[in-house]
Image (cartoon, rainbow, N blue to C red; front, side):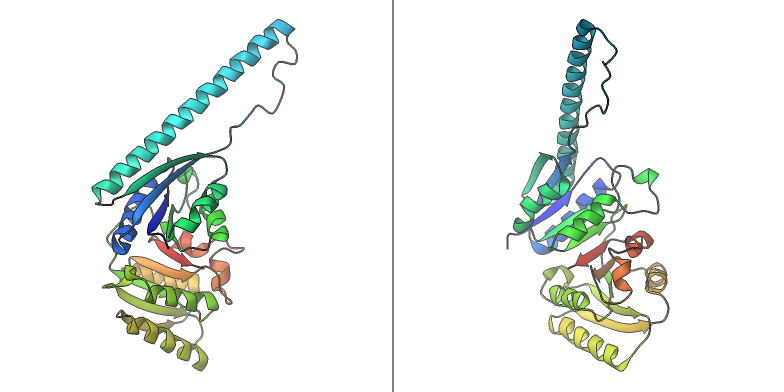
Length: 283
């Protein structure tokens, strides 16, 4: 697999954090970073603004509208290049090389699909350019990306802080076990403190699954604790994150229990909304 991290940047307040989180992951993987900024498809007027005008005036208006569209396109291109230049500067100051900037136009998922086979993970902000107007919600692009890709997705919170303590939400589902396998095989988690937590009811089968998962991680040289806490996952895990100072939440993107609804389901990523730390999602 190509050693690259794909960082999705826009004009939001999350973009700097995306860069620092991408730099953190790239440094631990000894990887480069591809920066991607996608310009949306150009919007066009939905009505005929010149319908009541004489032919000559209508022609002049259409020419003015065409010039305005061209100016807007140039401004969007300039803004996109500026965003990428700033992002590249942040990554290079964080010591990451190489950094490649890619400016594309069209649909974000189409652009990501082209690059996904070449990357190990994707980093995206919790919200986009309308973040200040959407507090309490996750961005629509985040949900679309997590639903469509098959590489891990690191969801950056608003500000980066050094990552030392990791909490793993474990529900014994296939995606949770897959997350454990991916963690065990990745240098990202070496030297970090890992706590595996199941939120909900305990059972003999669950505890056996947790023991297997813990053994897998410990065999990879990781320092691991495990525990079961009572309560709804979105409440119990959030409380644990806030009271014990974890720096990163790791989850499977889909599960067979209520965790499935917490991550890309009808509750629209409640755990990502609730936690103020980055979230790493495995498929």
